[in-house]
Length: 306
Ligand SMILES: NC(=O)c1ccc[n+]([C@@H]2O[C@H](COP(=O)([O-])OP(=O)(O)OC[C@H]3O[C@@H](n4cnc5c(N)ncnc54)[C@H](O)[C@@H]3O)[C@@H](O)[C@H]2O)c1
Image (cartoon, rainbow, N blue to C red):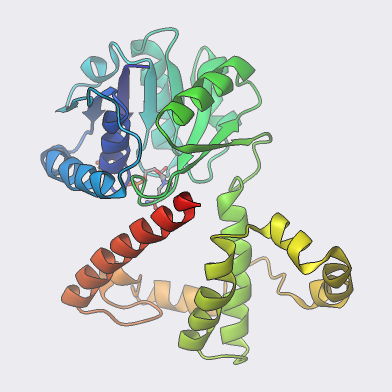
């Protein structure tokens, strides 16, 4: 694929555009917001710099990223259109209706949705076989995994075409065979976060030490030995013995911990508001973002080195 379009250039769009361009695709980015369009070139450049530091495969000819306020122009020649507008089913339905009308009939229409079923997005288009989930992880230019989700009507050929394109970009595709809520990554992450919050809520451990335990225990380990391989390392008999009493004791609540709901009610939303589970000055938040990006790049290189 040589020509792509990205619809929506907020947190995710610029990093996705830089990644596709590094792989040789020309990318047209469309956003309805003038402010987002103005921010995009600078953010694409920053993401391209991070990609250079990671140093993964790059096409001999880097693609060009252009920004437009005209949706029809953005998608006119695109073989791959990636939607990254806000996580709102109505907005996505309206956008997909337009993509269906204005894109090439053979273009793949992919959604970066974190949780809206692909099968429901497919209802907004005349040809649902070309609609597929393409779930990037944040920051999209640093985390290489991409979940490719087949909706009820997605053609297997579209899944395979997208998978080949992802492989050619040097990224890591994972096929999600059923359109389950949260797909794979978020289901696993949210299971971990529910248990972490329950342990803090039940005063089993202080918040800082919970993070230390996960980071230096399973977090560090899982980056090298993923969970199903870890079962073989630990021994299935050990897992069987522990899981037979522990599974029933793990947190299974269906609602959200008050630790989260009370803070959301007070507008304490995390780094973006200066306060969430922890406190941040603007300088500290910026320093943490940069430090974490550097560390993620170093960990990725270490994993790839073996
Ligand atoms: N932020 C994350 O960590 C993350 C991770 C994975 C997936 N996602 C998913 O990616 C999608 C985008 O997330 P985000 O965090 O980048 O959102 P965001 O709110 O930061 O950005 C969305 C952008 O879309 C633009 N927009 C709104 N309506 C539009 C329209 N009709 N046409 C074109 N542009 C429009 C907005 O102006 C904004 O710039 C969501 O579905 C989200 O769930 C986000």
